[in-house]
Image (cartoon, rainbow, N blue to C red; front, side, top):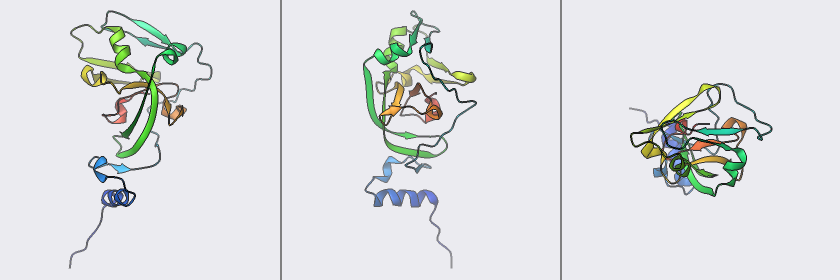
Length: 173
C-alpha cells in the first residue's frame, strides 16, 4: 500500500483557504508568510541624517538630475496595496506602500529613443536592471514607507524601488 504525503506548499495553500484567502493568489512554488523576510546583498547602509542624501538620475537621457531626500518627499505620493513575492519562494499579501512614482521620474529624465532598460545602482555595488516597459508601469515607485512606517534599514531605508509584478530582487534597495 502506498503512502500519501502532503507537501509544505499544499498545506500552505490549504491554510490560506481555511483563512478565507483565495489560494490562487499564491504563484506556483511559493509559500505564504505573514513575516517580511530579509534578503540583502552586502552590507546594509545605515543613514542617520538624510540632509546630504541624494539620488542621481542619469544615463542615456536628455535630462540628468539629482533628487534630495526633501525632493523625493515633496513629490505627490503614490500609495498602493499589493502582494509581493520573493524569488526565495515566499509571498506576502496585502502589503501597503507609499513613495514617489518611478514612471514620473523616468519621464522627467526623458530617456533617449533607443533606451530599452533602466539600470539601478545601489549602495555597496548592487545593481539590477529592468526593461523600460516594466519600469514604466503606473504602480511602480521609489518607496519610502511600508505599512505606514518608514522602511526598516534591512528593507532598504530610506528608499527602494517597488516593482510589484516582478519578484522583489528587481525592487532594488
